Image 1 (tube, rainbow, N blue to C red):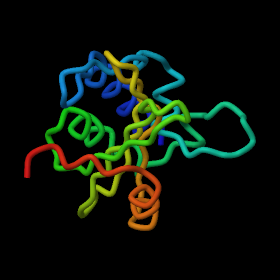
Image 2: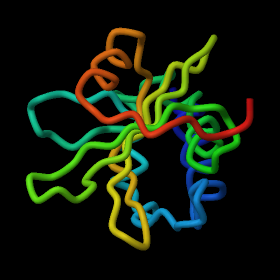
Image 3: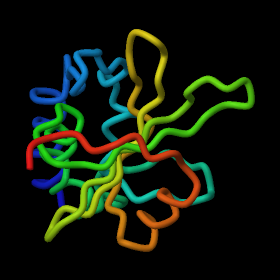
Image 4: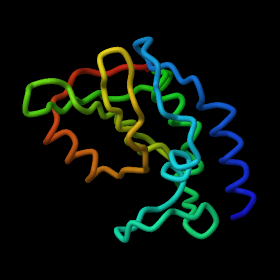
Length: 143
């Protein structure tokens, strides 16, 4: 697990900084240790800090390269949006499906940039819930 933690840390800080989304907008807030831990560790409901050794989740680690490709629009994904009570876009969810891919990426939208809220392996049941609660905006990416 220590090696997987080290490799994921190196990849995250070498490859996911300065990330530009499929539409040319930058993704802010990717430079922190906390964001890296959030992306590679399983989450509990106890609110304790995530430990990248004891809480590391290999399915999350192996999807870090997919995260980059999903956000850049290099993989075919379905795009969904959710709105705030004021009618502005609050969240954009990108759903990538396929063998070894099933993945959901959640971005916050702020007019001229995005923030990565979360990204995690998501099976068909979760993808179905996204489709039911959010507005489909089309597909992006190659394919």
